[in-house]
Image (cartoon, rainbow, N blue to C red; front, side, top):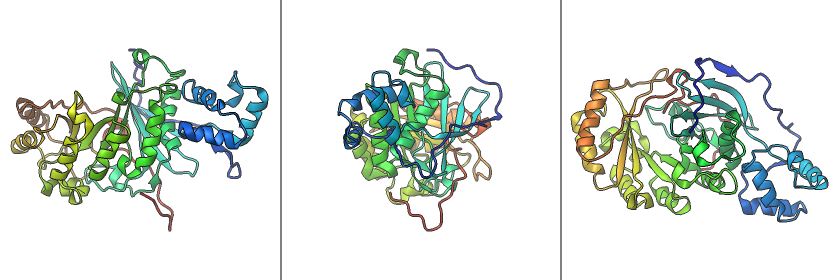
Length: 384
């Protein structure tokens, strides 16, 4: 697989002439983010033949077009009507930053002016696009920079799919390449927000991404990460059956209550029971448990042995994540020696426990560092 060579600057690339946006009085509907049946129904309401949905779907998601006039197998009269009623609109790039290690981060602006961050982490055998599901986050995990930004709102399906499409635009990866030649081969729902508190929109977006007539990513190339919304975990298996990752970060409820406060509602035992029942836990796929290494908090030998004990009944692996600092963070990263000793104990206990190499730290693109300046307007309510 060909990977993008790293750009040896971490300075933000200011996008001085972003793509033009619709005015407030432009009420045309965005076709990105509509499920297949919804796209067909929307076109039918406009008086267009049902077969047009398949044509337009292919142009949007296979070829990456944003211009109806380039859809060569559609008559000009029909293209004129499409231009009159609809748009194909991505989120707007505000800034793009490139790390010295090749990681790219985009700050994206949505039609209402709110913003979220998206990251691509290139590796030799894949490129993983880290996609956000919310502006801000409803959770307040104490080690996570995103958790310091109150939830502004959920992202819509077009805004979720659009993040991956922006990444593809940036790498000029249209039309959809074969898997062997993709620079952007994986999606990880590990950006800003808790995906399971935006379940319906995330499901719609990921089903679009998995459709083999468009972006065509296999469900095995998609990982959804949750902090532990226990009642929704089974529903992820039923609706998507993608890879599951769980932000664990502690081996007992006392510590996890502080690090991941949602634990007070669904403690570790309930979380692990839900994980054991997940479809991926019953076949060749393992559930990934994410574990941020925090100096003097969760990194002792006893913690490592307890981690092995509680995860042994589950078909699991552990990602050990050196803590990525951010301004005002209340924690420090465990030392290299401590992290590798911890990994040794977990590996010797029969669980795979690779230590994740931090990526994009110089542009605050690493795990737990994403945040935007968007704030909720006074009186605005968020539906979860």
